[in-house]
Length: 263
Image (cartoon, rainbow, N blue to C red; front, side, top):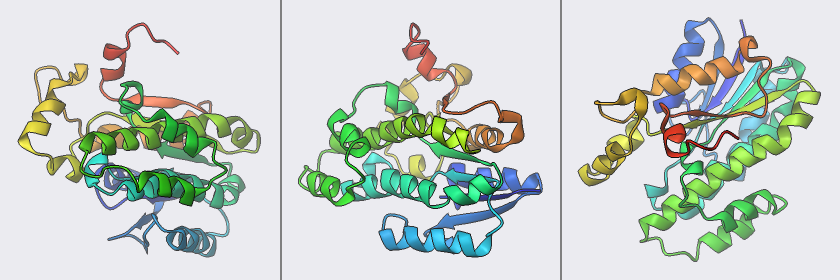
């Protein structure tokens, strides 16, 4: 059986992914601030470096898969955390363990979001993330001056990080694959997790107003295992022909909202 590492594996989609991988007999290293096999703050450079070092120490033989799932929503109120955890932690860890995944010709999966196709995005921030030579502090300085009382700003930054991640995956997929590492992203819809459980009744009502075709007539929030099962598939040999894909796992919402968009 294989060896997999995952960030944000203590709850929600991550916890379900851990469960499914273990059910299949795989070893899983969970990297999280609480309840992880490696307990670190991935929003910090120190936490990322510790994670990379620990994974090399624990599994010098390599990893069959790296799942980069950790993130926070735009409602967290901490714009710097959104930038550092959602984007920079993901890309830095992907580069940092690339050699381990390459050893086993494994796969990486990044968690994006289906909001990337729904507007409300700070494209200036997304472009800065992708084209800034990884100058994290520069981006943090910019977002630190934004109005933190504005929830819409937080959401637009969240979407910007997820858009930038999807584009990062596309940009790197060819070179990764040429060297034996597949990389894809999943773009989940609204999922029933601890993050969404904390939403106010008004916000939940707004979530449910966005139709999810596969949930027609029911609460619109999806179950975490609906996303986790796709993540597990993308890391498996069954998906060996899939690379550079941004897979929308949202019950058909993106197709409903963008019926004419086929690429």
